[in-house]
Length: 220
Image (cartoon, rainbow, N blue to C red; front, side, top):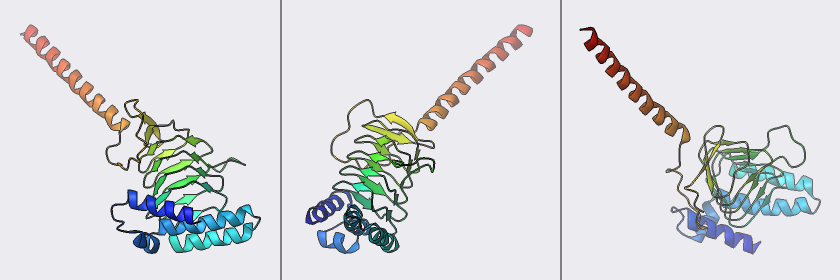
């Protein structure tokens, strides 16, 4: 447990500029509290104390606003920032150094049995309000944009934006192992497509005007 506590404190201090010291993290960060309680509930769940584990997870939800099923498997160095409204389903598997922002959901679609929640790789960023729904894998170093709804597998070293989520490779270059916290400069394929259509429309309008002038001049 001490190892988990140390890794959790380090994750917060590295990724949240508002965190000033370890004592502040221990006393004031609900994401940190939620993970400590989850570690205990997960131990209970694995040792056949499932009702107690579920009860502890509900207490966790009440006090932190973060709902984590005790069966969920979560790696080291996870950082849940603010965390209110975060939901992590029963068969979710999360790797190391993952960052999850408030309102994110790692859930199912309601149609599957067995493994029905996502598997999240290492060094993944799941931004505010993102929904990852289904039993697929989100690869290492992936970034899920705010408000995205992801319904299919995400390759490693890629970014997903939109509803439904669309994968956009970042220049086909591998992302650094350092956790990239930038959530602003994400690609927007819908906006890019609209820009291309706008320029095409302006080009066509110009050609129509030129043809009209030519016809008018010939008529005169």
